[in-house]
Image 1 (cartoon, rainbow, N blue to C red):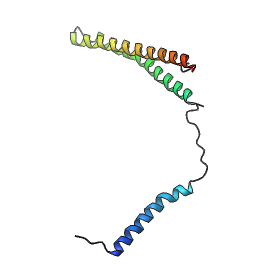
Image 2: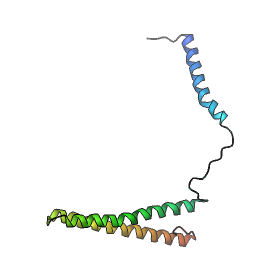
Image 3: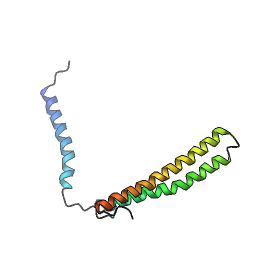
Image 4: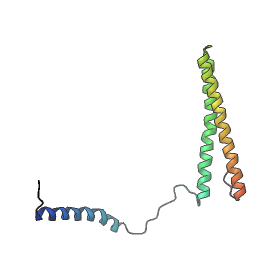
Amino acid sequence: MHVSSKNDIIMKKFIYLIILASVCFPLAVLAQKVVIENPINSPDIVSVLRSILNWIFGIAMALGPIMYILSGYRFITAAGEPEKINTAKKMALWTSIGLAIAIACRAIIALIGEILGINLVI
């Protein structure tokens, strides 16, 4: 069993002091006025939400036709195999459901914004 000597205790305290100083000293040096530019270029939270919602809706609307094309490709290349045809039909069905949900969400958000008097949808 190792018994700590007085020198070991002093050395540990010194190391802790060095670590504390190395962490706190840069903070003291940086304690000046820092100006951070707004990377979003939005003045308030409503503008940020509007940008995010429009971005997500745009992605959904862009993926919809791509998924329909992939579904049609799978349907054409199924060569009469029932399993592949069902997969293509399910893909088209779920694409339609996803687009319907995206459009409904945008309508619901617009309705909530209208009730609250906030323009969330452009």
